[in-house]
Figure 1 (cartoon, helix red, strand yellow):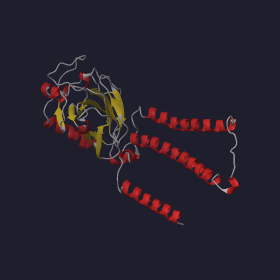
Figure 2: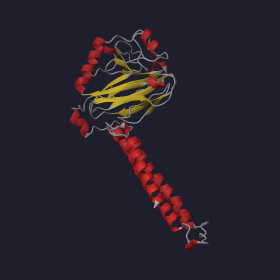
Figure 3: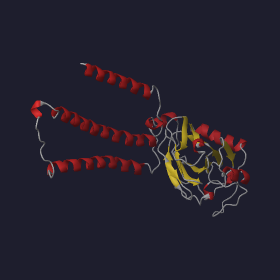
Figure 4: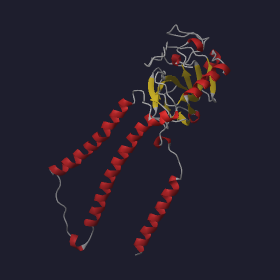
Length: 325
C-alpha cells in the first residue's frame, strides 16, 4: 500500500512538472509553419516522430510484459531461458524491422527534398491573403553573411538592405546564398529549413510566406563573438505594400558607397539599414533560372563607384536587372 502511494505521488508530481515546463501558449515556429516549404518539412518531422513513438511503445510494452511474466516468484525458480543464438527467425526479425523503418523514413525524405528544389506552389492560405499574379517574376534575393550581419540585395528592384527582409505574400522567393567571411547558416524557422552559405559558393533556397506577418530569421551556425547579433526580421506583406516599400527605399535611402560597403564587410555589429541603387555583378536578367554569383567578394551588390569584376554591367539601380516596381 505504501509503495502504491509513493508511485502515485511520483506520477502526479511528474505530470505537474511536465505541464509547468511546457508552458501555455508557447509558439514553436518550426511546428507552426507559415509557408508551403515549412509545411512540407513539418511532415518530415511528424512522420518519423509518430513512427518512433510506435516503436518505443512496442519496446516498452514488451519490456513490461517480460518484467511481469518472468519476475521472481516460486513457480519461476530455476527457470532457464531457451537458447536463441543462431535462431534464424529471431535474427531475421530484428534485422529486417530496422531496415523497414529506415526505408519508411528515407522515401518521404527523398521525395520532399527533391520537391523543395523547385519553386513552391501557392497554397489556399496564400491565395486568400493576397492576389498573386502568375505572370509576376519570382523575387530573387542575394543573401550574404558577413561578420556579424546579414546583407540582402534585390537585383530586380535595385535596392539593398542590412539585417531585415521584406517579401511579398504568396509569391516564391529565390534566395541565393553566399558568405563573405566564415561559413554560416541562413534560417527563417516559420517559413522553412536552414541552408548553408559558404564563401565562393552560390547555394539556393526557395521559401514563401502564406500570410502577412513578421517572422524571425537568424544564423543557425556559430561564427564568432558576434553570432548572437545575427538575427533579422522578415516582413511578409501584400504585393502592393511590397512595391510601395521598394519605392520608399529608392526615394529615401542613401546610395551604397564604396566606403560604406567596405565598412559593412568589416567584423562588426550593426542595426537595420536600407540602401538605394544596385550594380548587378553577374548580369542577372530577371529570368526564372538561377545565376552564379561570382567569387567571394563579388557575390554581393557592388557600389556604383567600385568597378565590377567579371561583368561589364555596371551602373545605378535604375539600370541593373529588371525592375519589378
